[in-house]
Image 1 (cartoon, helix red, strand yellow):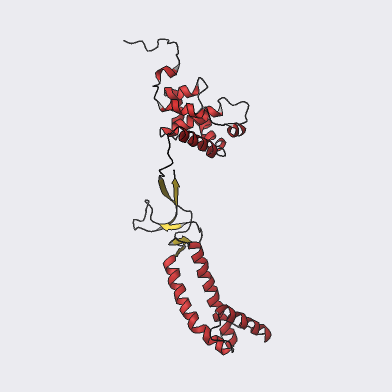
Image 2: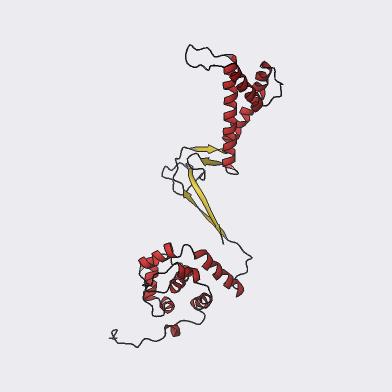
Length: 274
């Protein structure tokens, strides 16, 4: 029976790591990075592990598809490559790793990874010739029934323009204006006229509206609707829809469909290119 409790003198872990293992190239590159901003963001004098080492651990973990802080913690204890990166420094627990990547690294991450990418380019490992694009849909915290559809807006706007072209000239002629007077100019003229004659606006059952009040209300309605459609189109841009309660959200089909009816939901289509 083998004696598994035999005491063994620890040797340099690097001896057991293949010379072509990616971890060696990673450390070679990381040794040339500028960590000034990282150390400035991690000023605690009682820290147990070097922030630079923490960064190297995270990068190597990401290279191997390890993203969970608990899994990185485990790798530091049982994977000799992670042990080699630590170089006898204490193993960081999962909460320390989580705080580092979610708090300390946030403001300096872009600069460090930019430096890393530049080093890879200088070494001929990157060519900058290919770009990889990927995306995902994230459901928005918006009401599912606040949609604005581009086709509906365009259709209603077209109908409104037809009514304006037909009815505004009739109103203009009633007040001795040119037949080609624009909606805005005609409305402005009627508002000035209403002020001039001290027009009293009435409403409700049994109240008789003057012709001027009816014309003013009609043109005001046209103007407000026209501006509303313009605002919708401006918010839509090239999109086919958006949510009234979250203008950044677009209605689209998602993988999760609890009603099983293909209902479109407000969501964000987040994309990244590398």
